[in-house]
Amino acid sequence: MESHPKRMGMEYPYLTQDLPDIDPESPEAALEKSFPIQYIKNIQEGTVIGYKYFLFENADQMILKVRGKGNGIFTIMQKPEAEIAGTVAVDIDSEKWTDIAGGMNFRKGIYPLYLKYEGDGTIDFVTFTLYSCERR
Image (cartoon, helix red, strand yellow):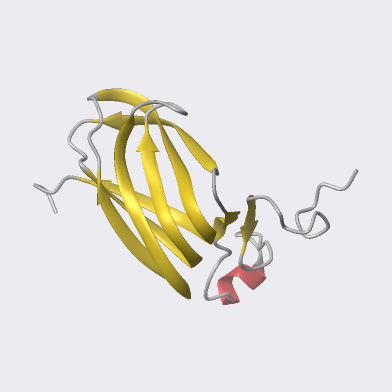
């Protein structure tokens, strides 16, 4: 059974990176100007991304760095299929990494963070930033 995304026809979201691996201790690494950037590729309708755990205190906004071609919404949740804590609207057609932002309302405490994409097209996702409107 093949499990490499390229052999599977890239039908599913998968983790990848933009450059080959570099040993940070190698002499070649000192010559490199950049290291590989890891990201989730091929996010599509129904994809759920989860991270554990974060201390939520004052964050009420989220910035996602994405690229690709898609139109939809990332819903922000504290549990898969749980009550929606916020949304980030997506309307992108670019191969350049682009910041998109939206509001959220998390209970204070330590929780996982889940994002679910609902929409058309395919999106690549590299980072997110949580912040408070008051502190920005």
